[in-house]
Length: 141
Image 1: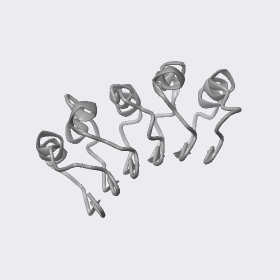
Image 2: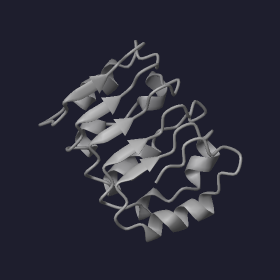
Image 3: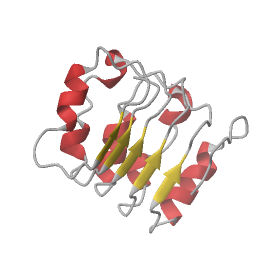
Image 4: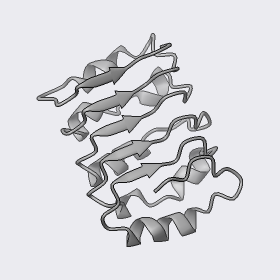
């Protein structure tokens, strides 16, 4: 499902209905949708397909609380590609998000164009336990 660039007409109720009905959804791209805490809080990530393999949230610079990732990755345990590029990420946003523990199948993570100089704990948590990661993109970090 590609919602890239859907900005002002972003309808969380409609998205929740679609997420619930698409039981075999494998790709969810919400790149540059002007997502923020208010919009994210209205999305029911527990209804997302457990078949989800790829998530792209890049260029959503107004998200300041990433705890929703725990909900998303708890339900979609087979995510192999996670794109969080160009999101103005910092240490406070990523505290307590242990992606390495939640995503055992993660192969690719793109954190490009984020200021990650103070995110040592988050980066260490990516490599906890057995991992399948083949690609870690840190361009312009």
